[in-house]
Image (cartoon, rainbow, N blue to C red; front, side):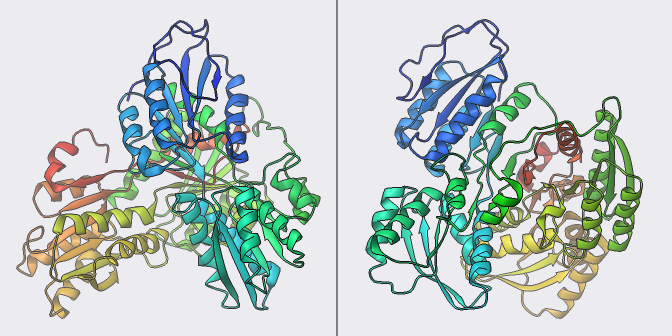
Length: 618
């Protein structure tokens, strides 16, 4: 990845029909950064809004110029556009892909030369600088919640109108919807219609289907345009009493907000395009600022008629600095404890980043007890800190204290671990790892490298019961191995993320299990190292007789891999301090924060451990 220094100027324009020249040219005077923006199409209203956001934000920064290219929904054309943008001499590429998988190779190629920001649809792998997009599963879950509210306890039927078949946003929104509706046996999805995000297609297909479906209570469409098309179809057919829900929540006379205002839609959800954020983060990347995450997911907002009355949703509001001039930011941080190498590195990162950023840090160690963390948060509230951040030891039990923080006007940032609350307004943003993806990565590595055709018996050493990483890593691992019936978890017990507990639990399992144990999946390195000791005491060779994969990738894991005892370590990056301090400073300066920020992480096999350990900070 490179960042080119400023150069003389070039005339730029919005090239809606695609780029026509690939010759590198001089730049306009005063232009320091040249950025290429490859848009999937300029037909969907949401993408038009994204492009407009990019233009408006770029206009606020005279040292940046953007070349725009419209792929007209053609993957081949978008590949050509990216190649031409690269030939044009851009310093950074922004791309909203037509197809995640098909665009992965060209994004990877571009990333080898310049920073790349991916918008809306993530390509495969991590070969990009930053992904910015909506949390599509969350949008689906939110829609499911509104459906359950609209219908209550009575039986109800739902038609789902999906976007493009197989596209990641369509799949994720559908998954989130069905996850919620599965908890309500009185609600049933009776039909699914694929309408490619288009209003007219939705209108035609819904018109054809509703002739054969006598009872419909709710039509949920994955964007507002399709919801409006579905509404038009029911009006032509004379069908009354159906509720409509959409997604996008765009302003303007034909946008979702106006459709809610006119009671065409019962609800929609804002789905931020990320256009503004792409330009802001592009400048951060080009200026080499610290604390830039790998992925950010933007916060959706529910829009209903009641919400419009109460908040005037969709009306822009001014962003004012939240800190009086001349006063230092005060951050209260409630740490879980010091139970592992990972946690020690995490604490060190937070403290050093606060000192470097000039932020006054009030630090409390919860010593692995929730009541200690709650007491620490209450002490921060009494001391009137500007921001509270904490890493929750478990997911549940925070509602009361976080409500106290909200009433005191103090925002709360979740670091490393999430919470399970009915009211997500009690916290501002989450930053840390994608624990589900870590579990998937461990599972993928295991099946791809063992390549076993016979039975593979796996012991899973789980982290603290009820904690977010323990829950999510189990989900991700199980999601992968379910496709391989010969891979089976025969024992799953908690080692509480502690080395001593990893040893004790593994020793007990070895003593009581008559079947051969082929592999161990440990939710952190410390439990894996404890398990290694127990395996050796049982007369077995870890790394040979028993394949072991763990999560964290701290120094202890690398030493175990170099010694041939640990097979693979999936990284869980503890160095969240710079990212936390950037978020705190951004918020206090008046900027909105995304709902989730995911840090960059890798996968380290034993074969490359000796080389990979060089230069690592933890």
